Image 1 (cartoon, rainbow, N blue to C red):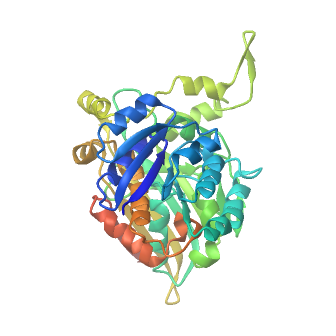
Image 2: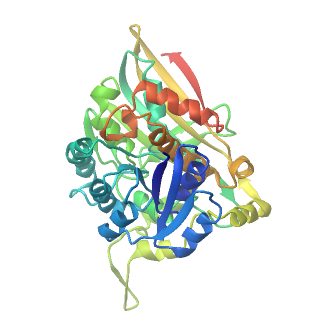
Length: 407
């Protein structure tokens, strides 16, 4: 009997997971659930195993109803719905997967992740189900790549996760994923793990520069609010060989667009008075940012208009010791750009890497590859799970290149 999967949220990433799972022999039914009727109908009509259902994610009972008889809920909704979906998965007795850790579980986001490990983990374990959080490209694929990189060290001191997105279309498109998520991340202080503690450096601060042999120029990475330093920091002793410093640094067109807005106060979520009207700067900016492209015809039109640049990188740098010597282990992730992603799958490069990166975690659910029940984050995969993940990724043209240097 095949697995029944509920995809909750059928935007750029959820729709990609649905399409990939439609090809899996171990999947019998895909429930495409969203409040957006058009998005659901557009997706369902291209699936063989799909059916649509309207779900109000603010209403836990609505989610539970859609998940009856399901084996897995894939949560591809914005972060604020995460607690509802987690609770619904437990009530419906299903597995759970999301693209980034949920908000609203505790007073702070960091405490929310701690609570997911501490409180939700035993609850999923009690019902014999697995929940995996942070399963896109970053967090997700990059976390598995970090496990892979650190494996080559005896001890680890410092880890850098470096992501650069240099895809630029001729039309105005600063983000190729959810603008509200992107701008929300950029509106707050960053996260880092330093000297064994989680810290909050200023967003866009402490730049580092790298010049890789497959990129035309040196590129800039800055501090950014992301899951990896928190998850990996909390798991440093058990999964990252005692690392004391873990950073996520981000660069590219989205950063270049958002940084001046942040410095001008335009990403503030506090109400302000302007000409006798109350406005929230963040909402005003968001209103003028186009949504991420997700429909085939729309992506084709963008390609026909032409691209200014189609480049990027995802790199893990792990510093530590091997055989008594100080070393750096690097893992570079290579994946199709926009043109190749569209030729392969009719989707954007962001959908390809994040959506298909997420779909590989879903595939592991379908195939029963997870070795334990309870709640884990994507940086807690076993080495066997990591190896299986990347063996599947290679078939999609997502590959790793390892580099190793004695310092």
